[in-house]
Length: 273
Image (cartoon, rainbow, N blue to C red; front, side, top):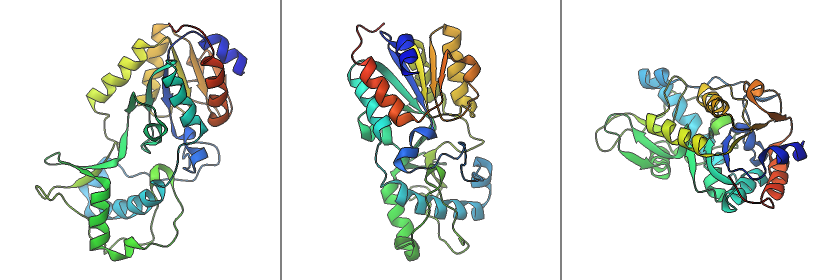
């Protein structure tokens, strides 16, 4: 399969779209893959509409983020960064919020669903570092500063047994609701971010999808856009995806080893178009 991918992609610049399956080798579960844990995600409507839902979310998100922030990029992240440095990858779009592409050294990265490094006020739009908000949360709720070992869940979230008495921080500027700067279910991807992702697709000579089931329309639309342009599409994922019928080649395999092999093959190729 690697030889087939090389034949399709060699000499072309690549746009890359990644999903949760890329980060599983870093210890972050993929909640849509085979044998993935059950998950009931917080919707944007529940978060803004109910203080109890916000308390539940912030406890789970905080405990998960503490474990989540200690993860490291894996060979797949590093392979994509190496391909960008070699001029093969010209832009990377990720549906992940873990920041691992940036930590691996990728530079032109569009975090389609945001990132966990920042928190934003929904009223005045002031942005705060996540560390700062985490410190306030632990100061007001000392038990969260020394939690028992927690099982890391998808997107850095865990479900605690109790959250009824937790004090949730609000915006120190205007008193508004604070929310991690990630796109919740039921929330739209910001228009400027969508346009930046589309530009990466439009500039490249091929599209490589890695570790995404393409179950979310924001990612599937980008695959459809590449198909309309008539460029080759290669999908690397464990299991079927919603984009398979649009792809020129699908590789049912892990992303770390496959991307490392592609990086070795494609960085040795000639000029990019």
